Structure formats: C-alpha cells, structure tokens
Amino acid sequence: MGEGWSALVVALVGVGGTLGAALLTQSRADRTKRMELEAAHAQRREELRHAEELRQAERAEQKAQALVELLRSCYTSLNTASRQYMTVQVNLLHALRNDTGVGLCLEQLEAGRAAQRDSYAQAEMVVPDEVLAAATAAGHRLNSGYALLKRVSATTPYDQEELSAFAAGVDDSWRQLALMQHRMRQDLGVGSGMRIEDAD
Image 1: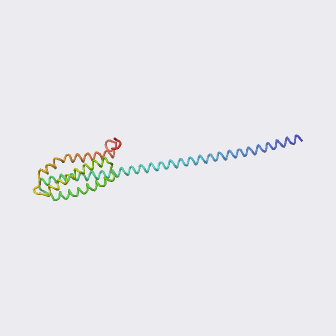
Image 2: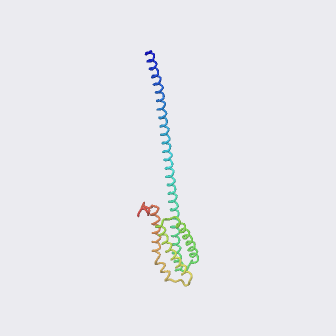
C-alpha cells in the first residue's frame, strides 16, 4: 500500500506542479500583456501631449507673425501718411511764399491731414507705448504746422514772418518724423536686431 500511495502522491504533485506552472505562466503572460498595454497607453498619451504642445507652439508662432505683419502694415501706413502730411505742408509754405497754387496745396493739406489722422487712429489700437509716444509727438508737431499754415492762408497778404517761423521748424519736424520711424524700426527688430522692450 505504501508504494501505491507514494505513486499517487508523486502523480498528484506532478499534476499540481504542471497546473501550477501553467497558471503561473498564464499569470505572468497576463501581467506582461497588461504592462505592454499600459506602456502603449502611456506612449500614446505622451505622443498626444507632444502633438498638442506642437499645435500650441505653432498657433503662438502664427499669432506672433500675424501681430508683426499688422504692426508692419500699421507702421508703413503711419510713416507714409505722416511724411506726406509734412511734404504737403512744405509745398503749401512755398505756395504761400510765392502766392501761387495755394488752393490746390490747401486741398492736398486737408487730404494729408485726414490720411495721417486715420493712420494714427489705427496705430493707437495696436502699437506699443514707446512707438505711440513718438507718433504722438510727431503728430502734435505736424498739427501745429497745419494750424499755423491754415491761419496764414486765411489772411492776405500772407504773413511772411509766420511763414519764416514755420520754415525754421521744418528740420525739427523731419527729425521728429525720423525719431518716430526709428522707434518703429526698433520695435520690428529692423537694423539693430533688438525690439524696444528687449533694450530695457
């Protein structure tokens, strides 16, 4: 009877070991598969996070580029309108001194003033404070010249002393416009390679 029991015990241990090994192998396979799936999910989450970061960076770059283009357009418009406004003032100065073509020059003066005012109004909404301060100073200078020339053109004979006073300030007016242009170029990073806010 001892041998029969021994054989039975050996057989049971063998079957138990075989079943235990199969269960252990299956458990390990399940755990390995679960770890692979978790790793795949983690990698997918990382890829999605990275893709979202790239999309956000791209949107930020597009927004920054759009702002630069808006500023460049605004600066070009304001610079052009301001310089033309100054040019028509100088043309009116000569017309008043020579007493010829005053009517046409006055029309051009009004058109120049309107164009400069419109460009400045746009600039007020988008440009940084440093540029706006320079544009405001240039605009005040131009409008002072406008007021003087309109006053002189309304009386005859034209007051040559007032015209001489205007002429004496022409170079300063051009310098004010050059300063405005310089501030615009700095803000765009043209020339110096540095924006105004980077210089502080």
